[in-house]
Length: 270
Image (cartoon, rainbow, N blue to C red):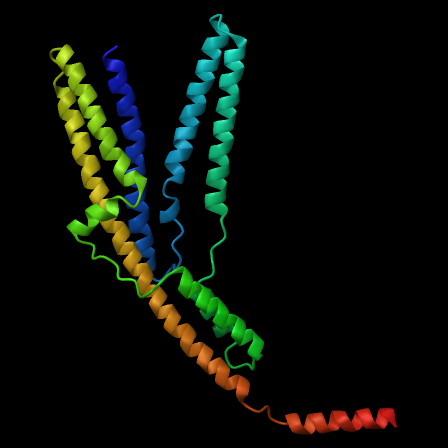
């Protein structure tokens, strides 16, 4: 009985530890993609929790099926089994919906999208209404993310504050402390099992180190994204100015074509 709470805490910590690994790995992966110029929109790091959540859902499905089977085949109440099955299905559907919405969410408007549209129409004459619409989209993007906001440096001090921004950086150390306490209680009541306490202490140290490392990697990624956004916004401003100048240039032969069209119209009316 003293081992069961420690085992449950250990299993919970392992699940949270996988969140830390996903957080750190996706932050570094997206940073490298940004550095290489292969990607300008960060899509992987914000959904780093998807794979661990799917793994937990699969484990929960197996545990739920086992519990329902035990209730049914050990003379338990059928109402209890039906209620457990309903809760299991509801939890799986909720997890599936959350993951699906997070993964399939379309990318929001960005400076890169505006820049690509302007590059595609470079050298052509565009209407003023279209340019006004682009400027409206540019203002909306500016309001959504303030490029003038000062980001903290990826130092050790700011990393501790950044840890609180994501739960996968806070929950694992807390669970590691709980696991360390429960394992210590188990070792105190079972002589010769003190090495479990050492393993739990190593787990706490690993979680704390990964929490700080994940925060620093996330800070570096945010800084890289900000730098890319500033460059793309400058390109958009330049391309908008060029498009504005080209839209005001007179079209060669436009007066002759208008005069000819008016003459044809008068002849038809006559």
